[in-house]
Length: 407
Image (cartoon, rainbow, N blue to C red; front, side, top):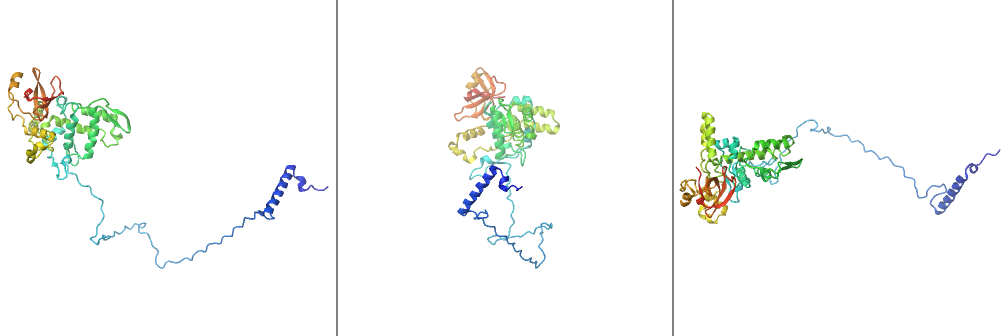
């Protein structure tokens, strides 16, 4: 039996495929694209790579170099001469200039070095460090009324709101701005917000110095604990401390003539000084009695120098008002005698100073008040004090005949 050939073993499909391949190869061969062996004519064998000759190893003439850093040997310092051939020098990081803790930076001008605030006295320190009682807080008379006490606070804080390098020194500009940011939103009632804590603290609560600030700070630190405060205390702790310092200074404002010139002790301050002196030991009693007395006058940071007084008419109105208030010492002019409203109005009007405790004639009665501002036309802006029917109300352009000193 004859064995089957290759073509006989292939199926019909495989035979057709093989014939198509043979015809295609013949066509490619006629085009010169492949050779008679079926290989591509355009492909060339890659040349064999020749091995790269290795350079001859050169032995070092001297000993091998070693790393002094890896061996733990400290680097040698080399002094390089300056480019101009001068003396040799070492580079050192720039040192930050020390800030004068008593320089009032808001008074510095181009040709003037600025005003130096007097150092803190022992009496002033005692006033700023002693918390007020509830009765003392409620007796506070706010400069400018309920809505404008922040300006008065900032005048105090920029002079005594610092902490470094000395306690109660003049603060830096940056820290002063941080205090302003928090105090302004507390006074307006907008509340304090925090970028990394949702909600608002005490929204709708308008703060005044009469509030219990220790209790408010305690609630604030529950709203944003210290360990979660990323501002290093500038969200609540530091601003509330400045508020408490202002609260105490406002009660003893007669002790701070640098901020509040020509101010006499209030009746509540005198009573508190006597009460604290009676409750203290012999050593502290004398200090407390001094706190009920007016401090020696000093030149305020924004007060005009004596040599400029003759040019007073050329000065801004605000400075002229301040100069008039400082020059008018309480009690210097004859006060109207106590009595009914008719007798007081008929007597010669007295001159009053900003911050002075007075009584204001309201209808047929005299109400406790204080002078908030001295106007250029001889009238006064008066704020009704605690005990008055409309305590905290501000009256503008009040004639001197309606005012008399408060006993």
